[in-house]
Image (cartoon, rainbow, N blue to C red; front, top):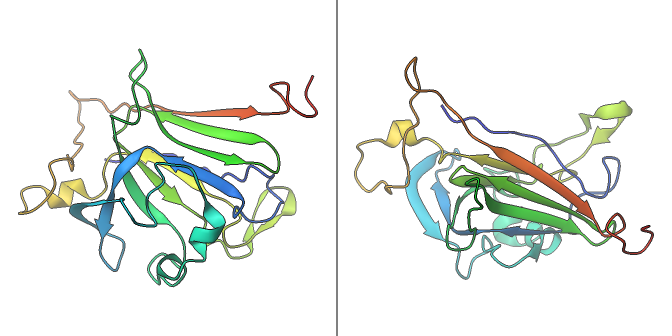
Length: 200
């Protein structure tokens, strides 16, 4: 099994523009290689000198317009990729949770931090949203929301025993004697709420 949470976020507000003005940081030095159907191959690729390097916060807007990302037919033009959380970047707290990723938007001064005890986080930038029905009658278009989905590395069960598969791909098998447990924490803060402009 490989459970996660597929909540969409837009820190500008759910009826605001797309997430181009969001800056994202991911504590991952490697990301999962996929085939033309977005199925994990069992290889991990270095983010160094690529558009997948979010170890330092980067604005989504410019990257979504880069040819490599924009013209990716499999992802429908955007990010739909899994990152292995780097324990040297994301130190675990006493409860075993580590900071997997964070997103901020200067427009509203809002920050989302995602903590987990899982080994990976998946960045999805709403590439297939297409006038999708939302709350309060809203319609969501492409890139109008993003997801940070903490999970185990995908497709591990089908890669077990195959040559060249990275050892980080570990199948999660549960049964009557082995329960499944994982933790994902979404932590929100705001400059205004913390005493910045417009705050108390």
